[in-house]
Amino acid sequence: MSYRTATWLAWSLAGLTVAIFAVAVVFAILTLIAAPSQLAEMVGGFVIILPFFSFPVVGVLIASRRPGNWIGWICLISGLFWTAFFENDASNAYELARTGTVKSSVTLDALTQADWVFPVGLLGIYMILLFPDGRLPTRSWRPFAWFAGGVMVLMNVIFSLVPGPLEDQPGVQNPFGLEQFPWLPGVAVSIVLTLPLCILVSAFSLVLRYRRSGREVREQIKWLGFAASFVGLMYFSTLISGLLLSPESYTTNETPPLWVSLSMNLTYISFASVPTAIGFAVLKYRLYEIEIIINRALVYGPLTATLVGLYFGSIVLLQRVFVVLTGEQSTLAIVASTLAIAALFTPLRRRIQSFIDKRFYRNKYDARKTLEAFSTRLRDETDLQTLNNDLVGVVTETLQPAHVSLWLRTDAAATGKGSGVKS
Image (cartoon, rainbow, N blue to C red):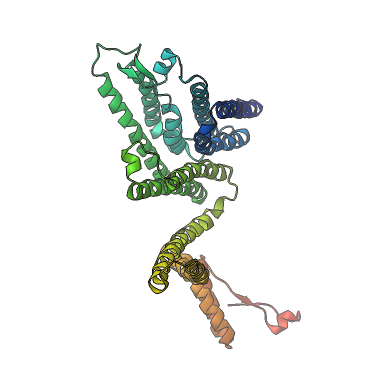
C-alpha cells in the first residue's frame, strides 16, 4: 500500500467512525424528545463512549503519518467497533422510547453474540503484542499471534452455534444452535477463558521487549504502562470503594448512589489516557517527559489523598467539638480545616517529594544532594587544588563518565601569553 493510499484509507475509517457517532447523537436527541426522562441514561452513555472515541483520533494520526505501524490501524478498527456498538444501543433506546419494544433480526443477533471479542482482542492482545513499532518482538511469537487470532475467530463461530435462548431475544432459541452437541457450551466457556490467558501472554511479551530494548523503546513502553496502571487504579478504587460504602447496589437492582455513578464515569473517562499515551509513545512527541509525569503522579496522588482525608477528618472532629461546646454545628469548622490544609500543602508536598525521590529516584536524589554539598564547599573553599579534586569527584559521582579532564586557564593564558593547564 502506498503512503497516499494508506493516508486516504486512514482518514476514511476515521470519517466513517465520526459519521456513525453522529448518527448515534441523532438517535440520542430523538430519544430525549420521545422520553425526556432518559436524560441521565443518555448522558451516561456518552460519558462511556467518549473515551473510546479517542482511539480513532489517535489512530488516524498514527496511521496517516506511519502507515507501516499496525498500532494506528488497530486503534482505528477498535474505535470503529466501539462506536458501532454505541450507535446500536442508541438506536435501540430510541425504538424502545418510541414504541415500547425493541425489534431486531434474530439471525443477526445469533451471528453477533460474540462481536465484542474482536475489539477486546485487538486492544488486549495485538495492541500489546505489537507495541510500539507495530512488529512482533521476535519471529518466535508468530505462532502465538496466529493462535490468538484463531481463538478470536473460533469464539465467534462457537457462540453462534451454542444452543439456547438468545440474550436480546426473550423466549427465542438460537436458530443456528446445534442441539445434538451438548458439549458445545462447555467448549464455549473454555474458549472464553483462553482469551484472558492470551492477554496475559501478550503482557509478558511486552515485559520481555522492555528488558531487551534500548532507552527509546523503554520510554515508549513506560507511556503505555503508566496509562494502563492509571486505568487499573481508577477501576479497582471505584470497585472497592463501591463495595465497601455501597454494597447493596451490587447485590440488588437498586440504582447506585450518585457518587458511585460519578466515580464509575470517571473510570470510563480514564480510558482515554490509553490512546493518548499510545499517541505520545508512537509519534515520540514529548517522549522523554514520562519520567516527569510519573514523578508528579507519585507525588500528587498521595498528596491529594492525604489532604482530602485530613480535610474531611478535621471537619468531622471540629464539628463534634463545636457540638460539645456550643450544642450546634458551626461553619468555623470548614474555615479552620481549609486554612489548615492551605498551611500544610507546601510542607507536606516537600516531604512526599523527598520520600518519592529517595525511594524511586535514588540516583537523581543522591546526585542532587552531592551537588548541593559541593555548592556549599565551593562557597567556603579557597584552595584551588582542593576545589579541583572536589569538582572532578562530583562530576564522576553524578554523571559517571568514562573519563574526566579539567582544564584551568591561568592568568597568562587569559591575556594570551600562556596556555591552558590540564589537571
